[in-house]
Image (tube, rainbow, N blue to C red):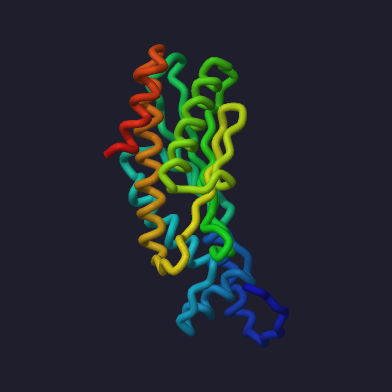
Length: 206
């Protein structure tokens, strides 16, 4: 959505009230005024859409994962503990796009660890998962990247699909739950790599 500069004549009391509200919401005066005007005329801004998606996603994750909201619009970090050596935590960072016609956003998954064996196993898992998704036509090869134990997965709306913010948030939540369950099944089967790979395949045969 393109933006332009306009001059508005506002009373000082209104500006002070807007500034207080903007500060409380962690946004700027311009963004808040833009949002308030959009709501008044019934227009859904990209910021409102992203907030609605993340609100639904947060509701999906609450009680199951650790949530960490970010000051940046359109971002949510979801943490999940893994029952493995050194008790690592996997972090899923959801970043939404302001231009959904290109992609809804990206999920970044990573471990905050220096343990190379764990990173190697994570890379094997995410490679297996990405290959299976491509084989089943769930995503295109360019939508998934695996490197150094980290995984980036771009997600899109299929052509002709008109999904609401709530439906998108719920779908992302269900997807993260599925990936997380597969990841834990994989690590639970180690050190038997054949069994670990079979555990991942089960999530595509259901």
